Image (cartoon, rainbow, N blue to C red; front, top):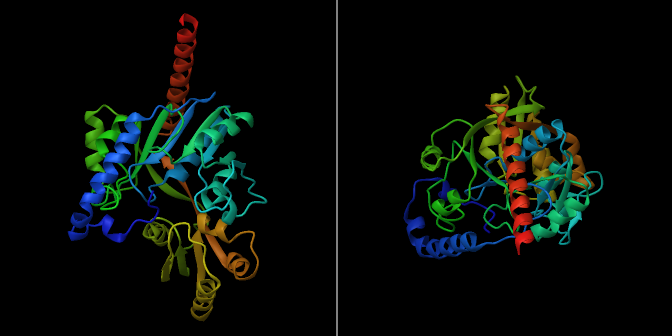
Length: 349
């Protein structure tokens, strides 16, 4: 899967999309066929997948965290399942946020592990089984909708209201991961995040298919006291502009902006440049929680930048506060139905 989204994917389709269309057709055929033919195994607990239709961030990780917090508040012991993108560990591992570094397990798993038991695994079925062995009674997958190798009881697809499906084309001509119709066929609910009308096409299509639709927004939970501050803002996430807007909405004046690649670990020379620019202009350095965990636990320049950073953390807030629990209850109900059906089938064989 392509991990970085070229800027032209989020613009009106042009000659680049047309040139790449034959490759996109092949990619879409393979991805769609794989989804339709998949017969993944089940595990012993309900599974909720937080995915998206496109490459690039739409808010999956904060959505997964929001779901886990609701689950914990209602007596569940949830666990997160991740591929650990950006990490070097290639064996099934329980993430320890106090000892692991992002270079080993990935940045998003470190954020998830602050909330609940988190396992990274190259084969998701292995990770799911490890979570069950750890005593988890609800698995929340961060991504993996198109390529899951285990049975999903509820697939919640997150879409950014400002970017939607981008130019609407499939990888590599655009950001869409598989044919939209085949993705919607396996989608149980859609979560639109933020303001804008770029997601309206998907929302209308989902409505015609009677798919549940939810709305949410991102709110600053910590580090939002930036009124009147002159800042240097940097972010290595899928959509840095979203972070910059959040900082500006917090009352800061962004004097310098620096955008890096998603999951990118900064080199010493890049860090030195950030620190020098901030000192010269008397700027407060602000960044995301995801960027901060990539700096944490290191020495040298990374430790120096981490010590200088003001971290802005965000929460995903559903417009309907009861929606996350309804999703969890639906997943649990479907899981129980599957177990009953499997038990009945086995009894009559």
